[in-house]
Image (cartoon, rainbow, N blue to C red; front, side, top):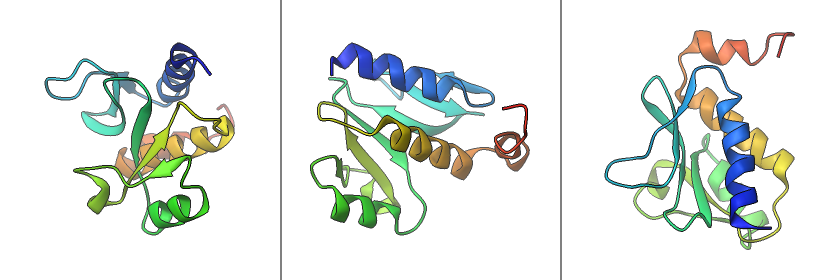
Length: 120
């Protein structure tokens, strides 16, 4: 898949979440996605990987099950964040679920609850 396709797909997934915004992290230029100032997805500068927050045990399970697609990212991996490669075949339904789970972990409860509303 072209990197631009992956970036566009990721942007669509992230920005469909309540009050999600795109704002680069620190001095980086790559897109990062936040809710109320809290990061839930970061992209690498080269656009080939993303990192997202995982619930306890998720990182270990994904990396063990599909090491060609998922990895322990530097700097934030010890906090349970998960890396996903976008330059390999990915299951985009799974990526969307993982992004939504990451969002739920950082979003205020009221916003996270909107994901369960029937209008969505």
